[in-house]
Amino acid sequence: MKIFKSQVKLLALTLLPTFFLLSCENDTTDIGANLIPDKLEGNKTFVDLVAYNISNNDTIRADYNTLGSGLIGIYEDNTFGKSKASFNIQVRLSTADEIKGTIQQVDSVVLSLNPAFNSSSYKEKKIILNPGSTSGVDTIKYVKKYTLASYLGKAGNSMEVNVNRINTFLESTSSKFYSNKTVDVGDKLGNALLGDSLTSISVKTSDGKVISEPTAAGYRIKLDPDYFYQYFFSKKGSADISDNSRFIQYFKGIKIQPVDENSKFMFNFPVSKMTLIAYYRYKDQSSDNFTPATYSFTMNSAYNSMVGEYNFYNRNTASSQFKQQMQNPNKQLGESILFLQGMGGPSIHLKLDDSQLEAIKDSVQNHNWAITGAKLKFYLTENVQSKPDYIYGYNYTQKKFLPDLTFYSGLAGYFFNPKYDFETNPQYYTLNVTKQIKDIVEKNKPNDEILVEMGNFITRSNNSNEYLGYSKTTRAYEPFRLTFYGNKNSGDKKLRLEILYTKN
Image (tube, rainbow, N blue to C red):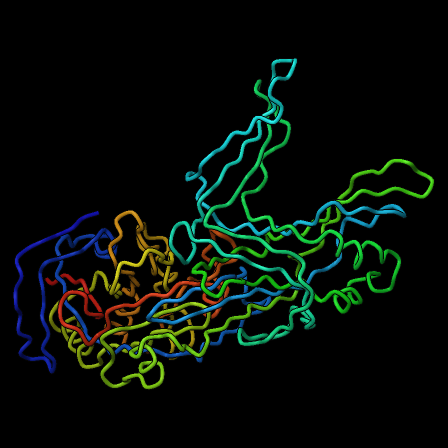
């Protein structure tokens, strides 16, 4: 990466309608060198903008078509107030298992959630299961605890959750549900205390023989086996569990919800990795011995309808500034502080200054400027412990992607919305908008409004540049909340457009 620095200058654009400062303290990277290979020098200038919040009424579509992950937890601070997230999902019959035998005994039922974790960050505990074995070989249980990769809360926080049967029919995966929907709670099925680490268990002998492979690191919530015997296994052969169309009317699904209103912990988890497995034994009337078996309910098919249920408590404990800006944003002058939140919380609307862009356009067309880069830097007002990996933006006027998302995708080191650098912790997020600005000043494209939101765009696969659409994002299940410096500030952290250019 090439970085160029020189003395700061003040250049008066006497023939242009707008005056602004040009700094020759340059931050040109190999992006500019690739766009204009012959130019190894650059300058920096800025364009003002107006930025304010859009409240979104604390509501977002949260159903099968928008929830790649479930979100659970409660979190409260003095800025955004309290937020609560619960997750509801249909439970469907197994596609591979059947209830075996005429007599069953249910030993355990386990609901597993598998959030992302840091595979290199773990603590291991060894437990000797049969010390003093005559063979001299011990059986050892290995318990590894991995740190969650992403969550809202302080290290060491935990949260009690309940799992309940629900009484609200969740219809189908084509149904539209919003996060303010109320799902009626039925019988309690189980309870667990979830913390900021995930457990994986394996068993080996002291001479290295594998007894059981490591289990997937995750939360395992034990549900009531007697309840599942009474309301499922004992009903073998009944119409209620004869097929899915009847079963989802009989057993409508489950809700996972936080219990303690004072807990400060929130996390998301991929629905595709959810499992609900009953471990049981069975036999026939004529048999004396039970045989072990499992029944895996279907939790992540193309037919499991779901609802993310969010409560913002009317923002009762949010700051006065937050409430004022949600109710009456300054759309003419912008704001000094900007709020950004997932789960249907506020977004950031911004519009670049037309007259200053016209000045840039004049310099490009008549004064031999060549734009090599353009970016928006969103500086955090405080160093919060829990930060998201990404924020994103799109063309709000035309409801489409900004061109930088894909136009420079083959250019090494160029990303429209680069992942936050947690190692250096620069205290700002970046949106690179080079192509967007070049289109405005070089091709007379319109200066469209931009909407900035929490999360990232979704692709068809983790390594694909095939995006599903500008509205297909992770925002609906992002727990995070950030505050940025707005455009009504002085100094380096003011929100504005930064342009890098060369001049012949």
